[in-house]
Image 1 (cartoon, rainbow, N blue to C red):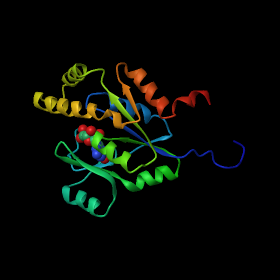
Image 2 (image 1 turned 180 degrees about the horizontal axis):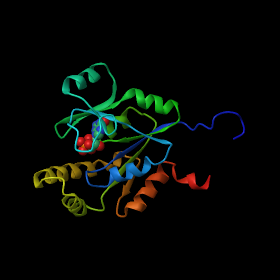
Image 3 (image 1 turned 30 degrees about the vertical axis):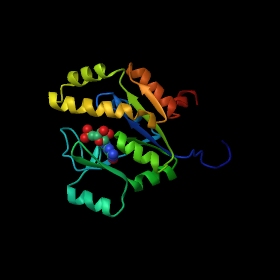
Length: 195
Ligand code: 5GP
């Protein structure tokens, strides 16, 4: 730029939502390879799954601690999802915005709606499966859920798809590489190779 000023674009949150099994976690992992992107580590009362680390995927806390966060106003939003509580901390979002970073928030649709309502500067992307049959097949092939949980996820997916128009953009994940490229473009991350 040559002005002596740091080339700082305004920061924003990049909200990615979509039904379980739509590929949003894979897309998020890809986005995080970009050094301009930080991951929002939510606080949750759910127990860690195998391979998850406290402070990396989530901050894992008990219900009392979660309540303390709620009472002290530490959350930008929080919700109960599948019987566990999840919350997005305010302070790291504020820091990321002040530093001109892209703050990636992988969150359910209720959380996305809450963030949209409080008007944090953001790009809101809903990742959709090509159709519900494909989603069911992906969940079955993933092999991590019982048939009951799959049915629960499918019911939630139908509800989420009905709320997709809350988002700024809907990206249909038919082909993962195309979906990743599309999300990167929408997030303003695609131009890097040309700089
Ligand atoms: P999981 O337990 O499978 O990691 O996440 C369950 C759901 O909670 C997912 O849809 C995930 O995106 C959502 N989630 C994760 N963090 C937050 C959060 O901070 N707030 C809200 N509202 N949902 C979250």
